[in-house]
Image (cartoon, rainbow, N blue to C red; front, side):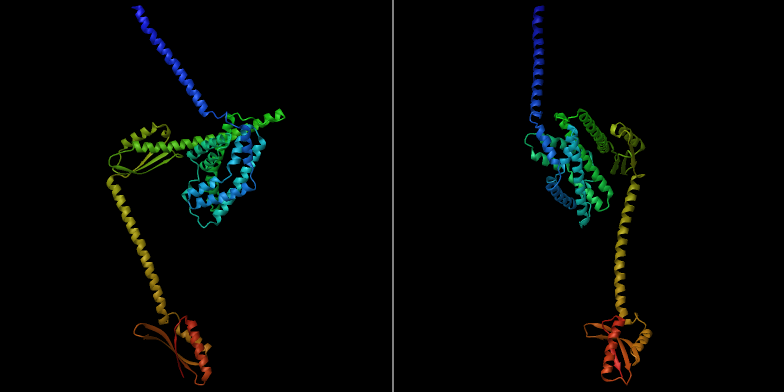
Length: 477
């Protein structure tokens, strides 16, 4: 019996050993497969990469004009909210060179390249902002388009795009035979130009919050592209710049490391802050959708404030009991991202009150609309009446004093002996007119041409004096 049991147990041990060997073999093959699939070190040309990066840093001549034109194109695209035009501008922009140069210089301890990269980046940014400011200053379109507003503050998505875009860019540059399409794609994805154009828009229109927010977004993108370059260069083992003086080399390495740390710390802090903010808003929306439900009540609005740690809910309909609200608050405290937040529920006393409030608001809106329309109608009627009164006054003599007019006439025309005034109504059976008519009695000693001249002058003077096109003058001897 013991021999039979031993014979049965031996195959089980062998099966176990065979499975263990197979698992190790599969694991080894998988590691080898992934290594061959993802390892980029054998195909990395370090010297050519450094030369290419240093070559792209320079900014003069053709690059300067390309940048100016691309900024104009991007500004036009933002101004008319055309995504296609903005993408076209990003394809021809030379902004990526100095940013990649900063990351590479820090990674290989090359102070000269680092200094040159910072100088060229500063010139590029200054020229870009100046060009965009000039465009938006002279542009007749001052509207805040969606493309402009989208570039006024960074989000966690912008940071992630900058990180992975920067990684794709430097990996593409390290490959023998640079992948141009990848570099163009990164230029589009990281969107360095639109924020600078938005800075110009903010300056040109004195919207400083837009300018600062857009500059903040550009800075974040630039920092994380440079950090991605730094990380990849270190992982791929790019050789450090050697100096004849070992002490100088050590000091340069310390300076480069310090710069890297100074740049990395606030960037990492910002990344964590934006990530927490995004998670907060996402969890708040998820909590509201899944938990805040009550029969007879409807959520009409909700807001979540990360800074004040508040989640505001606005209900309409039947009042939600306090016990239910307390249960919601307890449930929200169980969510880690919302543990410090306060749930604030806004609601009416009861459904009828809410309906009465809505009805009152509706009535108020209708009455206000009617009042505005009536005011417009009354204003138009008043203008019409005023115009008619002006026309009538021409014929009623209300715009002048007959006594004063007669005194002026006697001073100007001393041969006048008597003046009469009346309104003469005439008609041609199609139209009736009222014509101001003056009867003038002249001195009998005034005759011939002298009388004719005085009569004509008096008629012209009367038209100018009364500002009338038609005046009837009857001359009497």
